[in-house]
Length: 242
Image 1 (cartoon, rainbow, N blue to C red):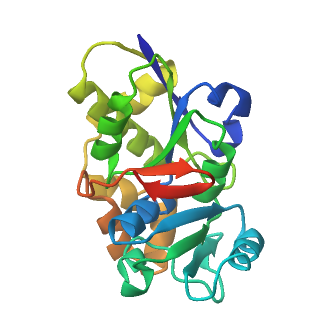
Image 2 (image 1 turned 45 degrees about the horizontal axis):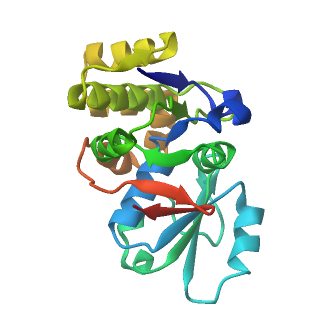
């Protein structure tokens, strides 16, 4: 029997415990949605950075013209960086490039989870593909779904994404799972949510902030389920499609 657990905020990650687990990170609005989109649309790899300073440091180690800096700080674009939304990750300038990506929450959650036995970036966009990849692991490792949250606060959209991930796992393999209380709560919230995926995301605190910025189109894009077959996997500090 394999355990599924949900971590509600990146600040709650136990780096020692997660080293024995498969980690799946969610920042639905937008980091993990953008990572999946970038890789699906031809980015060579995505390097997750803790902050813009580290992103610039990593850029200095690469050949000019081989990378794109992208990211946000507290929800606002960083000067000189490419816009971080998933729609912006479909731009032609991304193709074939290394995307050095800095966000307030999602990339930090990836870095804090990097000791996991395997780490994937998931979202509504690619949760189905990630579920299939998880099932390829034949061991008994626990699956830890990490909700990034926002600056120490719980985020409903990540919890919804975790619930969707659990739903996909259970649909593809009904038996053999033990859900922790947090996992049961996420799954129950997802399957019993009365509205649409778009309504859930747009109605959250982060969703309302994004709406204030005039970026509803990106929220609607991120609300699509199972449309990207890509599985972003962390390898040597870089997220690749694999």
